[in-house]
Image (tube, rainbow over all chains, first blue to last red; front, top):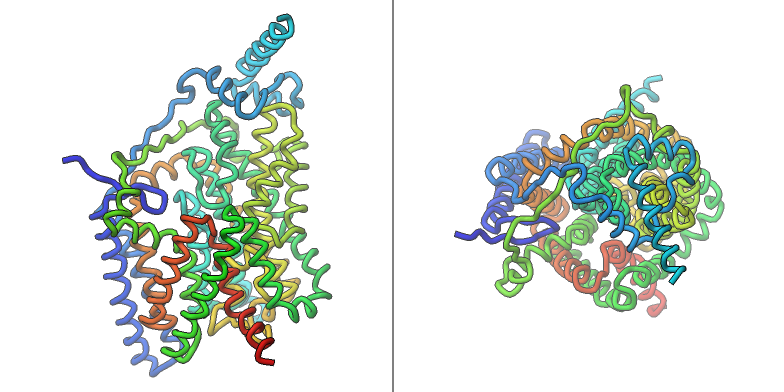
Length: 143
Length: 462
């Protein structure tokens, strides 16, 4: 059976699992809070702070509900661990330059930035890209 | 000595808790600041933590979250929270170049530098405007009115958001009168929570209706691509001052100072503007992208810090988008912190702490937030992001929030408060989704309803 997903609050969920989780959240937290509110009230003889202690108990219950829900319902996400250079870097550079303008000549970088680029193994590619752009510009001018 | 030691220990302990909790929450993509920081700060206040502890918790929380939010933003290509959105495109480009770890290192180093600069700058600017706080307080109802309009027009909703303020404010007034009738007191926390999680409530209603469901349906789970783990430095820990070169340090510091002074503007807008101001003129593309990461993430820290500190120290009224949003409980969390709607009188952190305490505790809390999250983000980013994505389902997070909202509303005003929160959340969430009237505008709408509307009524009655 094909599973259906819903996009709620920025990520995909399964609707039955979502109902289950909300049920757990409210079903665990609210009774514990109400019970704690009543219990602390009796124990402290009506201290104002009793109400606040109950709130802490309620928060603890929410965390508990989240742990239970996370154990019952697994995430609906596909995670791919990216390889460092998927596709060619040249294609990526072309796309970036189209959006934001030329990446420029790496030799014009400040000494520290130049060292950084070299350490990252970006220097050769940036330089090749720059030279390609210069050739293209020269060609365009010649025509 | 006793009198000094106890608050100091509270501040220290709460700062550590704030940093750890929000450092972890920063890893969970899409955890909006207002929706997470405001409720938990409220909780800390309501359980009776002393003012020093509350303030330290908050400052450590915001500085920590805006360090770790860079992890999903740079490694997964999805914004960690609302403030991470302006960084996203630059981060994606660096990811496409195969250097997402550089994007992360520049972003968190910029954040660390800016956060440390922003605290003293904000205290200084607060000191500059303090002499005028009396006048500001006297015209506060009208300032909120003007600020609400301004924030609305500057939001993505533009004029629709401005005009939608009218029905929104009237709904708040109506619900407030309903609550006063039923409970004998007005509500505030329930309104904030409803507004903060409005987008979630709207999505849940859509999911429950067959017609709305169709718009949310997806055929496959979302795919996330986690960048490979690369470690390029030698030794234990890179120093933030050495990760950035001199020009980037200068730009980051400059953006931190400018964005600290302009505390009335929206933090997201400032982040975009600072990126433009300090990044646009850099000719080299690589240098521009990496500088953008540092400057923009730095601005996410400095705007949050300054927009909290300046109104808190100088005025005591939540007169900035930040103060009206995530920092709201610091100004108004009845019965502990209160604002009097008619007189503008305050009894909140503004009255409980001195400027030197704001400076010392603020700086200490921010440093604690950074010391806990910066090394973590540098060394454990990949492992942490992967663990969260694999183990913590989105359902579990939504369920926990549903429980939290229910408990806090019941605490404030029983079932009536819960109904109010759901009502305002549904209305606000739909206004947000359809007209881009974001939560900041709605928070201002709430203040117009409780501060300006009585002033207008008084004007006509008089």
